[in-house]
Amino acid sequence: MTSSIIEVKLPQSSYQVVIASNILSQLGSYLERLDLGQKIILISNPEIFNHYGKIVVDSLTRSGFKVFDHLIPSGESYKNLDTITRIYDSALENRLERSSTMIALGGGVIGDITGFAAATWLRGINFVQVPTSLLGMVDASIGGKTGVNHPQGKNLIGAFYQPRLVFIDPFVLKTLPVREFRAGMAEVVKYGIIWNRDLFEQLEQATTLNNLDDLSCELLQYIIVSSCRAKVDVVVRDEKEVDLRAILNYGHTIGHAIESLTGYGTINHGEAVGIGMVAAGKIAVKLQLWTEEEVKRQNDLIAKVGLLTTFPKILKINEVINVLQTDKKIKAGKVRFILPTEIGKVIISDHVSFEVIKNCLFI
Image (cartoon, rainbow, N blue to C red):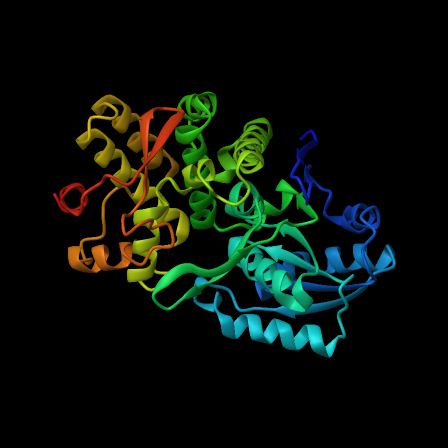
């Protein structure tokens, strides 16, 4: 697999996304170039740390860093302020300074938590993303969105805080559970629909997409690099989600409601986004924004990835509507939806009535 470097050029906090297989052991040498302080807290979960912690710690130690680790149990249910407080305790115990660094070694949950802790400890210390899930690589690690959940909504507490480096080694995906791989593919499909028609069509042409073992190295590299470039293209145009960046939430409006109502973990993030994209596609057809043929192509691709395309029957419409009304993307009391107009293009709309939502989810 070849290596790629994507520049994220922002007015105050530019950084690189480095993508190459078998480079995890070189992390320390990359960080030496960033003029960081000596102390690093490596934040991970026990499973990931067991697989890759020693490689990362040894690399950092060889480069002269003093490394402490802080492990968080796996799962979205730990993405809360109690977990953040425990990270603060570790930072205080190990006397982290403003020049110190927090490294996220894990999936999207670890990245979000670590980024928020780094953004708020001592009013902001260095932060590095080392994603180990496909979802983390193609989406969560790039763009500076950090945060934790509130009991009544996903990611309601957070900050925009850019990392100093995103360091992606696709080789680590070999230990990723199949379900988590498919969850990451939901975000890849999303990029094809909102931004990159070529990516969508390449995915359509692939024989299978629901298992990492069946993907060639070339296709995996293409998927990761294309998705990262799409995310970077949007972020550099709208870092703080004033307008354009909202399109990255395609499928997430309904998806976040599903996650919240099913208790964060019963249906994982990618699975919920897949269902949310199906719902958004139905809404777009209902509003005559795109065609039945296009929504079928989308839904067929989501199914090809191995994700559900039906709304959970256990959910009640009044519960969904209530959660949508607390969504952080609400504006002037109206829920904003990202709706496709063709494959590769979407619009942002706050003209979707709750009646339309009801019809598209439950009929």
